[in-house]
Length: 196
Image (cartoon, rainbow, N blue to C red; front, side, top):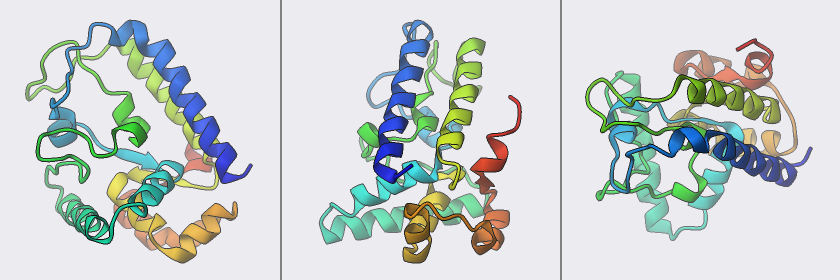
């Protein structure tokens, strides 16, 4: 399956989740500017396909904006290495999302039935199960890719050789093994086979 077709299927999976999750999300108290999950609680993970979409979007920006975003991603990566709580690199100063329309599924699934505190969001158990199943679908779709924190996935996809191999449908996890082990990157085709 080519990348364009995968991107179309990705949108279908997102849309399917939103339709099935709507009854649960109807009572959500989340609003524009609420960024608790983007700063304190949420783990902003992505699959390689989502990383490619974000990477290509970054490439459409003017040079200075590209430089600024890449610096934020690198800073985010370093903070993650130290296990520090880190703001998503795409969170703007006003706590809105720079990539909202192309945000990864890990962000799309989030909501809360009460205002978030240190205990994190309150979510329906059924929505969590639905999200887990959706993650498996995403990993199956992106079988020649990987999953991990957004800054690590973007680091991989920014490498021309990795990106070329990925876009061609190639798959060689040995090439990223040291990086993957260090940063907890998982191989989609392996984890997507595991039962939920």
